[in-house]
Image (cartoon, rainbow, N blue to C red; front, top):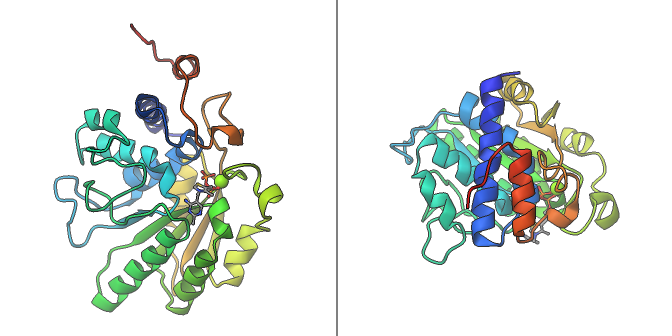
Amino acid sequence: MNSELNAKAKQIRVDILESLYACQSGHPGGSLSCVEILLALYENVMKYDPKNPQMEDRDRFVMSKGHACPSLYAILADKGFFPKKDLLSLRQADSHLQGHPDMTKTPGIDCNTGSLGQGISVAGGMALAAKYKKADYKVYALIGDGEMQEGLVWEAAMSAAHYKLDNFTVLLDYNHLQIDGSNEEVMNIGNPIEKFKAFGFECIEVDGHDIDAITKALNQPVSGKPKFICCHTHKGYGISFMQDNHNWHGKPIATENYEAAMKELGVEIHG
Ligand SMILES: Cc1ncc(C[n+]2csc(CCOP(=O)(O)OP(=O)(O)O)c2C)c(N)n1
Ligand SMILES: [Mg+2]
């Protein structure tokens, strides 16, 4: 594994927790579970220009599980879309970094999301638009497993296969937990791979915390079909007391928890 990118993943986790601690709200669990997925996309695969966020032929990323945007904000700041200090204004009324992604405010955001199920649908539309325009950009959407309970996800999947969107990749953050329990308890989603396969996708399964494996899956060529990458992850990954614990889906981080988390990430806190 690439040790430089693993070090970056750790730094992104520090940035996420600092921004969430500063605003005393937001979603730690789902933000921490998708760090490696976003790093594979933004470090290894996607075409974009932080100095020209609207570049016509950029690849598009849609954070369909919009509540996990602190991880996307941390990566966009790291890539230079906006200053890193902005991360500490997360969720403030006058900040461009709102609790859910807003394309009218934040450089590098291509779609407003937050209402689960909508992002993947818009992303499919963007991929279809690229086909009509004969543009060669690609579209990537990240969905949550709880999000798969939304009917819209399946309308998007059906149409992506119908229109043979081989420029469209759906990544699943398969952490088995949603807002107040496991998927199995709340609403069993069954086998996501079998489902997306049945809907006409090319399906690949990877360790969702292995940046190289995710990158390889993203780069695997497909023709005439959309791609589905099932990323096996842990909610709250990287912080022992948050990991695999749905109680950390969305809650303020108390000072003792923040200090313990920073210690686990090897960061000394002063003052
Ligand atoms: C349509 C809709 N219903 C409910 C919510 C509230 N909500 C926010 S996150 C969440 C759970 C999502 O779980 P999952 O997709 O598994 O996300 P992750 O585990 O990656 O955080 C819910 C129900 C919402 N944002 N949108
Ligand atoms: Mg989940």
